[in-house]
Length: 311
Image (cartoon, rainbow, N blue to C red; front, side):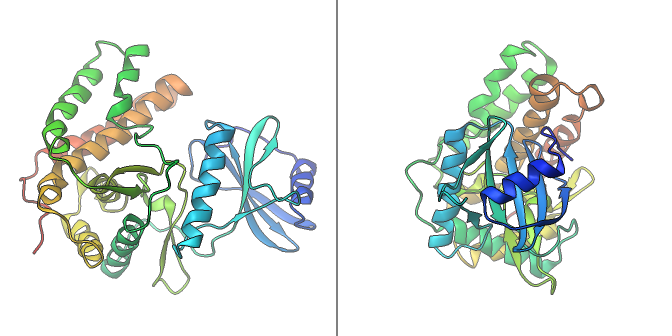
């Protein structure tokens, strides 16, 4: 659970007043999310999620709220951002950008059924079919474009050498001109809500969305929802992939890149953990937290090249 900003009940009521939410009934800190503080506000006018952003600028949060509006306008199901009484989608609290979203009813699960994975694949395909706003970044915060940041705090380390090996492995596939789209880039189980009847999945938390390789989103989803210990459950991955291909057929070069981008996605998240807990927010208890996803990447690397191919 991340809670970088602590708000007293009076603070939260003051923020609720800015949004015209009425009286607060209860509040709680939401689990998940390592770069924001999220409060669930149960109010007289409904339930909402207050996000206090910790590692993004005001401009970045404005782009996020614009993206959420873009998704809504294109009938893509996700969180709906709520303006304050001044009509602003982004406010401030203690100098930090804040935003309010309607609470998505449902639950976060860790074991997806075959049909839920198929539906999630379809949702990813629908996302990749949308027009890409011109303000979307074309590099990932934790992608290979930023692996060089290890020079700041871990230059010459074994871990840096390993990431460089991953880059060399992935580079030939990137050079093939893989298709790009509007991607989420962080499809982990805690960013997916399943409704009460267990038949609808909703992707949320688009803070890391980008205009990037479609197959990266698939690789990240394999890591995020198909992982069992350090192994990818290939049957689960294929259920998701079949759902995706019911919306978008992978191109030949993407099919070849599925395993390499699974490795890349796991390595990218390993890098994020390494940077987050060893440099951005040093946390001694989590200094080695990155190793679990490094092991996932290595295990995936050892798979046969056609492991993820389906008819």
